[in-house]
Structures are given as structure tokens and as C-alpha cells.
Image (cartoon, rainbow, N blue to C red; front, top):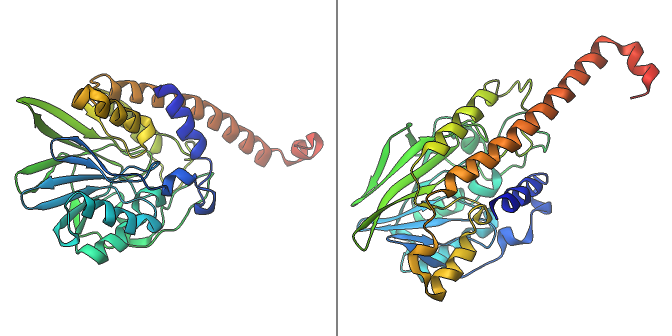
Length: 301
């Protein structure tokens, strides 16, 4: 299932423009409880997670700008009033995961937390990097707090820890937290994306360390303990299918899969290696054409 999901996400990544986005990315679904204080409040195709605390709520990810009212309605339906949303945590600064932050911040007064690597893109409303898919703008938003690698953000009795897993973006951030369920402590991980998604891997002038960052992030994510994996694209971990099984009687156990994050990292690393080889071949061809213009003309390529 993970292999099929990764292939689907890679196909989606080939269409960066909002007009070409999958319909599921803005399709409403009813919010649902996952485990402990964690709820799903996103759309069918883009995950957003709400974490309830005794001092207000935390939101993980902010999808398409047009989905901000839907997210607010979903929050209200699970008992979170706009003024109770206190923190929003950035996963990564792409339009499908950060475009709603500006409206949500304006409507609720919640503070946006992001890493230093992604803060410039959030403030500009545009991810700057060498990418074959181009770039889609999103509403610029102030970053209220910069989070460091390994830092734990606290609200009330809840603490959620940032682990930097750059590559997909320079500041890609994986969040994790312990949740106690019926006396058992479960490690819940909200992984940042680790797909290539059109990123130029060879000769990326805007992000020269991209290859090394990806490799470190694959290793780091594969080593993270994770009982429950809640990614930003729900199909990556079959989140909606797991919810159906939970409702059918499996309960929280439907979401527990300690080997899942390692499988996701392994699949993503294999795809990355394939893309790296292909990108290197293309880069060599470009160099040959620049150095041998007469040969380029003779070959007609």
C-alpha cells in the first residue's frame, strides 16, 4: 500500500499549479478523532491535525488558502473556537501545506511556528529553489516563532518536538509527541514530506546542499521511533482507511504501525536515488551541449 501511495504522491507532485491540483485537496470530509488529543481536521487529500490541550489548541499544517474556512468549521465542530487556536506548526513552505496560514492567523490570532530554513519562504509567500515544476505563490504570512532542531514547543500540558528533516524544502520539519492511551505511551509522528517533487538535485544553485540534506533526512526519519504516523498527505499512511477500520471496531490500534515510518523512508530513498541518477544524466547532457555547440547542432537534439 505504501508503494502505491508514494507513486501517487510523486505523480501529484508533477502538477504544482493550483489550477491543476487534485480535487481531493479541497474536498471536505468530517473531522475525526485519532488518538489522545489528536484530531484530523483537514480535507480528503491534504491533512491538517488539531491537538487539544488544557490551554488551547495546536494546528499542524495549513493547506490550500481556499480551505481556511473549512478548517475553521472543522475546528468548531470538535469544540475548538477560533480564539482557542493558539499555535500553528509549519511542516514545509509549499502552497499545499502553508497557504491557509495567513487567513487562519488573521481569523484566530494563532501564532505561526516554523524553522529558520522555511521562514523566508513563508514571509515571501513563495518557495524559492530550483524546481522543474516551477513555483506556486501563496499568501505571505509572518512567522511568530523560529523553532530549533530538537526544540519542544509547549502549550498547556502538551509538548511537541521539532526534528529538522530538510531536503523537500530547506526547513522541512517533522513533529513528534508522546500520547498516553489506556496506560500505554505511543509516539505520534507528523513527518515532513521527503519526496523529490521536482527538486533539481544536481547543480541546484538556490539549494546547493540539497542532496546531502535529503540523505541525512532519510536516515534520520528511518531511525525515529513512531507508533502512529500522520503525514501531510493522508494517503502516505492510509490515514482515512485506518480511520474507517478504527470506526469498524479496531479502535486506536488501526493507526498503530511501528514499522510504517521506516518503510516510507526506504521507499522515498529508493525513489530519490533513481531521480538522482536520472538528474545526473540530464546534467551531464546539458554540460556536453554547452561545451560542444557544433555537435549539438549536428545531432539535432
